[in-house]
Image: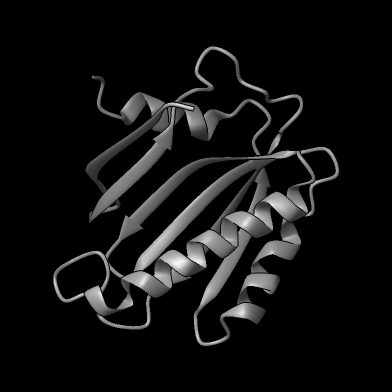
Length: 141
């Protein structure tokens, strides 16, 4: 994997993006035609940053649990492609297919961390058009 980390503006919000650009040139759209989004909202006001410093450890714990759950419910049919952090919100993006059950991830995460607002959505993106738009707008280095 080749990950890019950069700051940018998304929908008027200053954001930090972590993007896996290793799929450029070899999009697994037929095998992984769906895109899942999972959002985790911070509990504390970020006070001019992306998250409150006192909440950093918990947010990292939630993220680690999220990635473990995606691995568990992905059954080898899910890839982590992007994370976007803006003030008070962390968003995670996964392409999936096969027998992946990513619809179970957010409820399982919410069960582990009931005090956090956690939401998810999924949609078809068989040509990885959203991914290609992310790569196109990422800084070229």
